Image 1 (cartoon, each protein chain N blue to C red):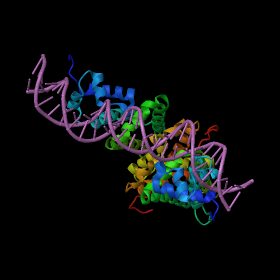
Image 2: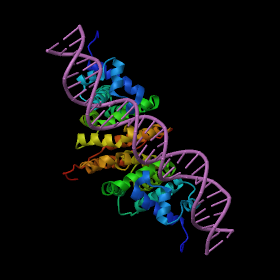
Image 3: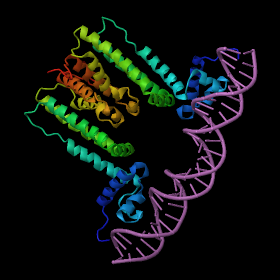
Length: 202
Length: 202
DNA sequence: CGACTGACAGATATTGAAATCTGTCAGTTG
DNA sequence: CAACTGACAGATTTCAATATCTGTCAGTCG
């Protein structure tokens, strides 16, 4: 009674409950129980269970945004920045998959529930990629007609290394080799690539 | 009674039953019923239900091999062959997804059941890619230190356009654009790519 | 004698009744 | 009066009984 119930406290409790029981068993009643309040109170802050889960998902994804935010340094070539950024993303995903499979699975389920949040998240990451590629274009290291389109292509070409549907492949001992090969291919492509625009000419 | 029960007839009936009832409902009893025999007879030809399903899967995948077999023509540049091959594979997958979603889903389920067959299938397709890339290397159109490794990289980079886990994205109206962008990037990479070998130097 | 049947045991799937959960809201409390 | 409770209706999930399926094999048939 001493403290007022905040949205933040509910989110923290929800994360805890999700981690404990998994996405299939976690209920709003569980969250309320963990907070020592009635489940009706939770509904003062989140209109539905789906909204509550979505808020947790958004929080998790925002943490990734922040961690992945690229730092620009004129001394570092764009190809290096790009490789490091992709490696960092891959490492993060792979680590969370191997070190806490249960949480990873929970996360994947939640992500599958709120496509709007995910779309925003993906757009944000591709935006970071775009800025790195733009830096490469500015220094003449990369060549492309359409930075946004190319950033999306790089994202698409590396899906195997960050899309959760491919998580089981991340345990393969040769996966780092495969990653290096794809990044190398993509970087080579960026050095001399002119993607014909959808409406443009050759 | 006139005709003896053949493995071939059982496979055809199994395909029909799978198409009709889906992978979850299709039973060995259904297959036997469709053939007008007791289900015990089916077990004379296939040791288990899993083996039966696997045989159907192998058959389907073999049909893809055959259809995808590249034709070599010295007049056609390797980049064109590669693009056409990838486009053909993408079209085939996308078409089967949009035109007969139910069968596609059934197919995906079966594929998920027999990893050994799938591994063989993937190896076979990557082998076809390898031959195309080798043709490009022979004509100096492509540059690479390791054709097998590069073929795998091209495969990995285009997963979004053939891995069934990404099927829902194939309905996106901009998917062909995304495909073109990735293929263009990959082809540009092949024109000047030296993937540092795992143990080699820069 | 080789191809097939049909009854069987154990494993798996289906079903429907009971329990639990979600979302609402009139009422309680400080 | 703002924050919360707890009882409620309808939706969803659980669970145990029941039915079906898989895989085997002794026995039938031509």
